[in-house]
Image (cartoon, rainbow, N blue to C red):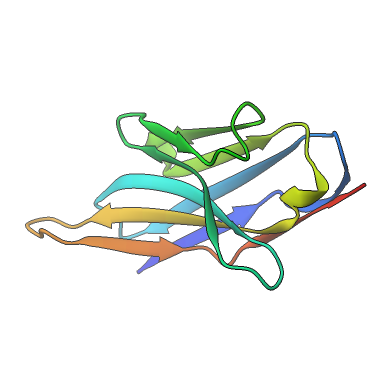
Length: 121
């Protein structure tokens, strides 16, 4: 059983910074990829940033130069530092991990419950 829990959301004014945290616990063999996705109200869930176990990073164009993703492999944690927040960053932010299991060719996705980030203008 694997649990993914996000924290750090809130209501902030435009221009300030916020840091999201995500921790994965449970029966985890190896995490290949950790990432953040967001879903504005009434819209689809989109990628924000991902980071592999080797440190390769992908950002959505809309957050490049403002957001920074990082991970702590020893603690199965991933973080999202969000600077210069804009009202259009308002969304529920979800953490996702992609794991593997011993002697398995498959990968397994686990999602957190989401944390609300609201940016007022």
